[in-house]
Image (cartoon, each protein chain N blue to C red):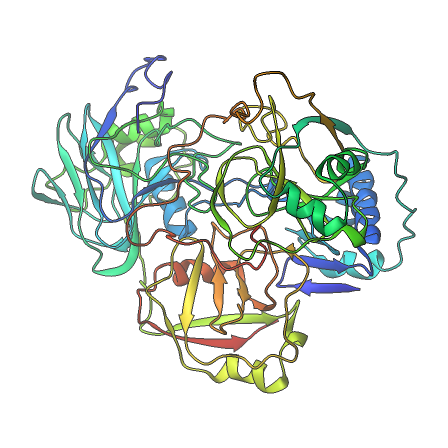
Length: 330
Length: 248
C-alpha cells in the first residue's frame, strides 16, 4: 500500500506519523464502521467484525467514532511508528510489546518515535484491533476506509513494508498523547491528570477495557425467517438442536459452520433477494453460513433465520472448532 | 407479502418482477418526499431483488409491516426514471450461440438486443453490476456450463432473461454478446459511483464497426482497479466467493 496522498500535507501538530508494516500477519485490514447506504448498488457494508472492540479503541484514544483501526487475524501484526503517538490494542487478547518490552493490552499507551509496536498471536479470540490517535488515514471509498474482501473496495490487506499515514489528532486525542501510560507502566491512567481537566464535568475515565472474551461455546440467538418455510419443521429443529462447529473456512464474509444439514421443504433456489447482516443462509450442500460484514448484498439460497447484530461480535471472535448452538429468539 | 427479517428488516415479496420494480419505484418516491422515513422512523437500505424489496435498518419494522401491505402501487410507467445510453460493440464470443438459440443471425440478435428498452431491476454480485430486465422471457438463455475464469470489464452478458454488464474483470458464467466501450460502469470517485442504479432505463447504442479495428476491440476502459480486487491473501481471507446463489 502506498502512502495516501494528502495524508501528510496538512502538517498540523502531531500529524504526519507514518506506520511502517514490519510484520503484516496472517490478515490485517483497515476497518471502520463500514459503508452504509450502498447495498442497492451491490456494495457490501464491510467494517470491523468486532465492532464493540473497534469502537472501544477509538473511545479510549479520544478519536472520533469514524476513525479507522487495524483488524488483525489470528497472529497479530507489528508496526514501526515514525513519530510519537498513542496506541491501544483491543479485541482478541494478545501479548503486546514495544521494541520487545511488554506493553499493556486494552489500555492506551505512548509509543515513542521509531518504536516497533507488536500485537502477538491471539491468546483468546481471533481478531485484535490496533488503534492510533488520529486513526489510520487511508483515502475513504464511498465514505469508508474499510477493506471489503468480497468486492475489493478499500485498501488491500496489509503487506510487509507498506506505509500507512495516521490522521490529524483531535484535541482530545492530542491530549491523550500527553497523559497516556508510558510503555513500561502497565496501567497508568491517562484521563485523570488532564485530558478532560478544567471543565468540572470530567467523564468517567475509561483506562482499561474489561473484555469477557469468547465463551467456550458460541450461543447464537436466531430469529426465524424470512425463508424458514423453505425448511421442514424437522429441519428447523435440526438448526436449534444440532451441534455445530465453526469451520476453518470462515472469513470476513461469513461464519461457516460444520454440522447437521437442516432438511429442506423444497429444493431449488430463490430469485435473488436482499441479504442482511447476520442472515443464516443454507447453501445446497446444507452447511449454514452466518453472514458477517463483507457478505454479498443479494443471494439466492434460502435464509432460515437471522442472528441479531449484537451477537455477531462474539461470532467473529470464535476460532475454528468452537462449538456453536442456535437458540430461538424473537 | 411482508416477511420479517431479523429484528430490523422487512422483505416485501411481490408476485412478479414487474410488480417488484413498481413497488421499488414507489418506495423511492416515498423516500424522496420524506414520507417513508417519517412512517418508518428511518430506513438504512432499500435493496431491490428479482421479486422482492428488502428494507433494512428499520428501528421498528412492525410499524411499517402492516401498512406496506395496504399500499396502492401505481403500475410502472415504462417511460419513467432516469435514462442512460451505453455505447456497445456486439462482438462477444457467445453472440453466435445466443443468436442460434434465438433462431436468428448474429446481426439480427444484436439488432434485437439494441432495440430493447432495459431497466435496472436490481444490483448484486459486484459493485455496480445491474440485472437488466426488458428482454422477453422467450429470449432467456442458460448460463454457460463452463464459466470463464476471466470476463473482461465492460462485457455484456445474458443469463435467463437478464442482461448484465461486468463492471470490472472477474470470473463469470453469463453468455457474452458484446462490450460496452468508453464507459466506466463503476467508479467510486464518481457520484453516483454506479452508472446502473435500480430503476434506471438503459439502451445499448451499437457502435459502427470501424475499418481496421475488427477483431481487436479496444480495451474497455478498465477503470483503475483497487489493488486488492483480485481477492484477499492469506488465511482468514475469502479465497472463494461466498455462497450466495446468484453469481453471474
